Amino acid sequence: MAKRLVLDSDISGKPDATTVLFGLEGDWYEIDLTDEERQKLERALKKYLVKGRKATAETTRLVGETTPDERHEIRAWAEKEGYEIAPRGRIPQDVLAAYDEAHGIERTYVAEGHNATTKAATNRDVPAMTADEREKIRAWARRKGMDVAGKGQIPKMIVAAYDKAHRITRGE
Image 1: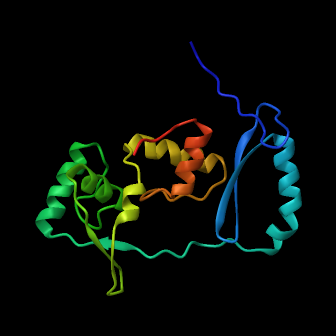
Image 2: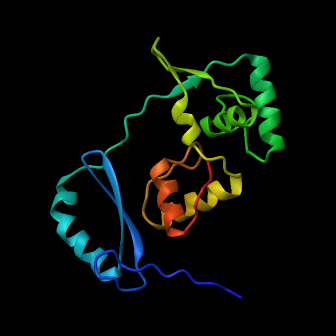
Image 3: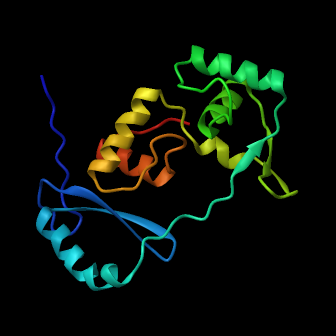
């Protein structure tokens, strides 16, 4: 038996809504809208969108301090767990976070190009996912018009929007 999930509009309460994601002042919002309501929102924002420019997120890449032996061990573990990982190069942040979580490691991270160090508390917020699930989320995000890289960590706001649209609750 197939089940169908029907979202109701947050504005009108009408059925068959979809989740719309938008940002303002560095904050991201999502709202469930019917096609008509989504078009109305787009028309209201259009004069700003045509004059504006697409922003790129300014990110600081955090690099975990690991030894060559530890990186070899992490790669072996990741392959066994079903992660797609290159034999050389940087270990993806989500793989490192999953490895640390599985092994109870609290790693110190260094901002690349900086001397400052910080505890990786935010890394615990990255849910471990299979490669197939990451690809499903990326494909869904692209269909929704979101910018998402072909590899690497998927932004939390995209995972959250996907989870909400699919009624998924991720356990900590």
